[in-house]
Length: 615
Image (cartoon, rainbow, N blue to C red; front, side, top):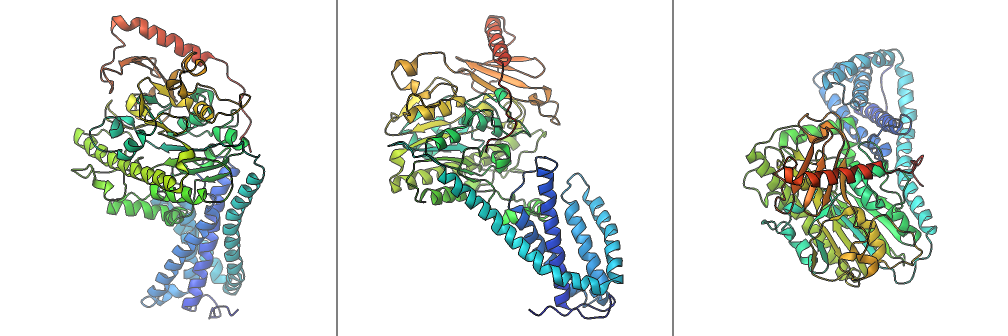
């Protein structure tokens, strides 16, 4: 293969276009490999939580190759006016400066201006070296650019190949399933609060599809999450344990101390698949993939490619700011999630499946596709994203809630399409479907926005719908409060597994429609919710004062703040919890009862933590 002709006896001659582009491509591949190595080392050598997309090892070189190639074209074009910029030393110095800057952009604490100055300064030395060793540099570029390109291709094929081989081996290890086992579909609507859903009586038609399918199953009017944010809430739904019993926390993954629902069903012969849009806390790094034969969190896309490098992240931020857009690198829409799951279900396996779907479209920024983007808006919000620590006016909160509810309607629409597709395929009749949310969202009901910062009902009360024609009665509504901690026990109960099959903590929710001694007796599950202290939050956020815990019993919701302050609300008469009853003398006995029960729960001994994740 003929190599581009890099003319000139030294570094003073002008470089032809092919030479400039070759150097740019070489520098881009080298920089991208460096960026991929930096992030990989941060995770596996320094053991930091870096939200590492496994595809970054090939996406970063490809993205930097494109960026540097464009820069090379611009540099060559500039040579028509300023011929000196086509000199080899200048081209090499510019490539070195861009490369250093790209690497420095991986350190967000470094001010961009400082990064530019540092990169410019560090580029001087490579330019001088190339000036003195022009022939050696040209030879190095020619001899290594092809090898780097081949390495990137191998890394791309290797990442995908590793995933395919690992999945194939996991499938081969599955035991034979029992006869007549149904499919199980767990749908989690990230950040969807029950208080904004028309299926729960809200005035806007936000969830007509959930309303349609609620007629086919049991709807729980007052389901409560165990935590007001993603990771511990999902961990409870997967293990049946409360957050304080689990390792999962702000930067700590779920360890292998307790088995997950996916592991239990996999061990019964189910083929298990997870499809998540919230890769921030549902990704493989946080342990929720344990037990899944197939798990899709990070998947290649155009925005993921752009976000794989420092320049791309800066470009996305600038684009969003200038054009008032809300692009997030790698973010998956409900439509993409549906497509991925439906493709997976048509693979021939002859086994029942357990699938977990996490929809992320109702999480801020609230930016669904048209017409849902303006479905409930009269005024465009100043921003569709929640700015932590900012005080919002009533008008701003109202506009943001309208944007949020449009996003909820968007998710509802695609959940309806998904279930309709399964029904057309004839598989819905034999599928246990559970639809819920990991937590809700607050819009100033208690002076702050978003979630993960308090334990009030707007953050905790979520939808819960169970559909299974063979074993769940249609059109029933349950008024009593229930906890999502009981989800895994409920799944195993509805599968009618042998009596010696492993179980989960908690109690099956089937007790609310089955009239049997086994399902209706015993002590009810405690409706415990928790959130741990998160440093760096505004002082007026409840979470800034320390670990928080809450209990619901009967009509009362008790909250103990990190500073010891207690709150008590009558959630039947005051669902938005505007009136704190904790200081009223008639309820002091209730307060003491909650206090005693909570102390006894937290004082229970815990098993030793597992040393690592299960394979």
